[in-house]
Length: 50
Image (tube, rainbow, N blue to C red):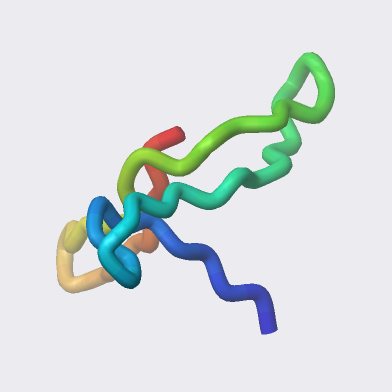
């Protein structure tokens, strides 16, 4: 299981994990800013801001 952490206070220290995202131009190494869910027409979509 992959566990991604994105927290301004993780054990009293900020923690923003890094991810490898596949983009149209190739892979992108990025740092997480926020993890959230968006509900649209009774469907839930997990999203990440990088």
